[in-house]
Image (tube, rainbow over all chains, first blue to last red; front, side, top):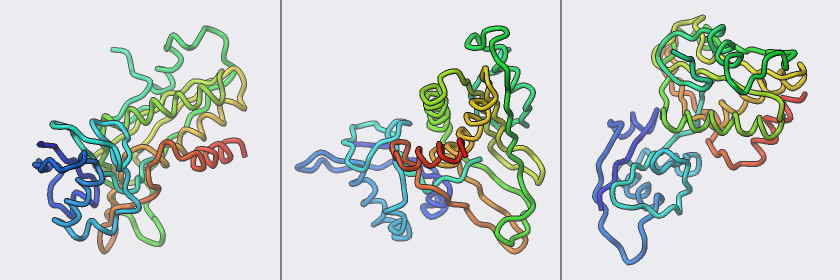
Length: 84
Length: 164
């Protein structure tokens, strides 16, 4: 299963990319947004500090970490926001 | 070209156009409104003791627009006679430039004031937009609220501030 990961603001700086393509091995259980996050946090340890403060979205809609993802989904991780 | 009620983009903001979009919208019946309240957010030259040189705004644009739609829907629910227009700018903004322009209309001023204030509070809580602050001596991503549109406490807090 292949997904696109979108990263913003400081998360983008940490990973050094705004967009990453990731292949996920099909596991025994459904793959969730949280699984994708944990894989990224292993790859980029500095991301781990954001575990409790990020929000996530799937295909440009807010989604929880237990949201089950599908092939082709766009998953976004959002650090705390500061618009206005 | 008609100006959309809700928008995010890189061009300079025009508060008159934002207010005009609302007055021209079919949701505004001629003569019904007694008030339009506007808000223009500006880039300030100082922040927590730092001398700010400029800001760069970044957004997850499709989700930001959905967040604006959600804020407009929340306003329609809480203040049924009030309506909202909101434009947010992204990209590099200099000191004194406008980052967000909001207009709220209603038959009575109380609802228009409340809806306008509520809108900016909710933008700060849930819109996926970030400020990168460049100041004298460095730069930093500003991180405010964890965006959770379903957080009832945050919504209640925005409502409390709007009605204070």
